[in-house]
Amino acid sequence: MKANVKKGDVVMVISGSTKDKQATVAAVDYDGGRVTLEGEGAKKIKKHVKPKRAQDKGGIMEQSGTVHISNVMPICGACGKPTRVGHKEIEENGKKKKVRVCVKCGAVLTSPKLSQPKSIVERVKKRISRRSDKEKEKAGE
Ligand SMILES: [Zn+2]
Image 1 (spheres, protein in one colour):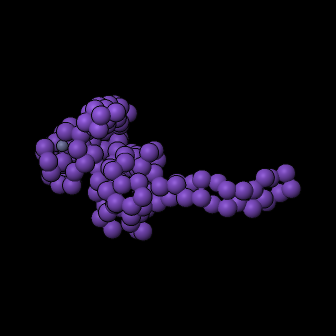
Image 2: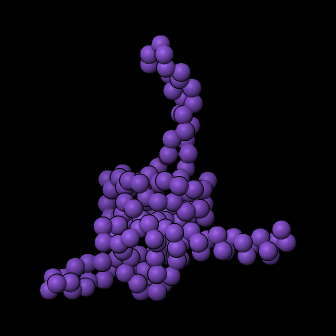
C-alpha cells in the first residue's frame, strides 16, 4: 500500500484519542497500513501480562498501539505545519529521484536518512511550546 509517511517522520495525529498531538513514527506496516508511534501522540494500550515464570510479576504493561496511516500527517520541517504530501521528481547527481514535498510550502520533506530528524523535532517542539504558551495567555492562565 502506498504510504506517505516513513519511519523517523515527525507526524501530527489527526484522529483518535491522541488527536492534535505529535509523535515520531517508530515503524510503518506498509501491508497493514498502520504506523507505530513514539512520543506524546502515541496511543498507549494496556496489556495484561501473565507471569511466565515464578519470579515474574505480571500485571499491566503499557505498550505503544498502532494507528491507521491515514490518522497521521507528516509535519513539514520547513513550515512546521502538518501537511498532505505531494510528490515531485528532482534530479540529483544526474539521476532522477522522486521526493515527497509539502503541499503547503513546497519544501522537500526530508527523509530520515538524508536529514537531521533531531533538529527538525527540536524546531517543531519549540514551535509547539511557543504556540501553547500563546494559547495559555489567551485563556488567561
Ligand atoms: Zn511546508
